[in-house]
Image (cartoon, rainbow, N blue to C red; front, top):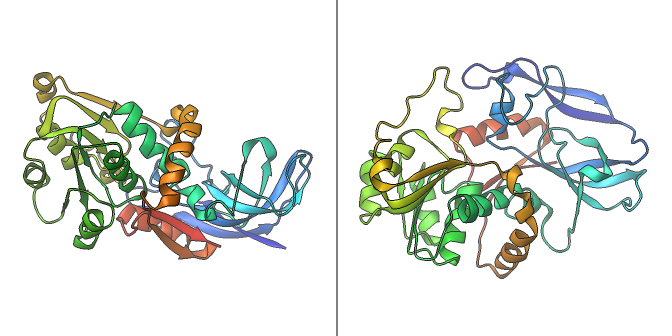
Length: 332
């Protein structure tokens, strides 16, 4: 049996190029004691993976050159040497970018394919969902009546942030996205009060028009001109939760910082970055609250599904371009 897996050959400079990667054929590994062999069914590609392609010191170790990359995956157990896990069980684990993976039992989570579609455990009920939940409720200290602005609002995290804020009683939710179609989706499908296409004009002007009374919370997925605009519209005591800055991930030179940081003195505003890994203690609360919203249809989610391991790299590049609506998933 052949296992196809993606290797990083060289560290990208600027935008990743196909020649930085290779789809390699290898033998399907054999599980040892306490391990299982998983045939992956769905793979996750996420913006943070761009940072792991760099050698720069960060919160996660860089991908190793010449080795298979990693990422979230859900699959079916086809061989088990681990107590409590049977052939046919479905596991959520972190050995994506490949067709088959050997996984230690303690590093995987059993998921129920009957309770929800398997792909949702990589998105709305998985890491991206918890990111939205923790960033809004804990890092940004959301409270009922807050006005919330979300950038990258049609993405996997942003779309959930806006909907959770509405379900929790936000007074107004505004989103930015990169196309008129996504703007329409935010308002008509996800229930945002207002949204704008950041390519259609100056972000600060469009935000002031969409939020004439300012914003209490900004959930940042983009950085750059969005962060500067949010600081300019921040109300007194406003909070900014920095989840990602996809607009600068491929820059070859340092991006200029916001020019209006002094306004935080006036507003007593706060900016705080966060990582979902620091908030896994919220997982039970997240599942118990968000799960019923998903089941009832109160919280909607989108997926952009790409077929085939051979298209895993193109799916990742599509995330960096903003091609996806909701979670980008690779189906094997």
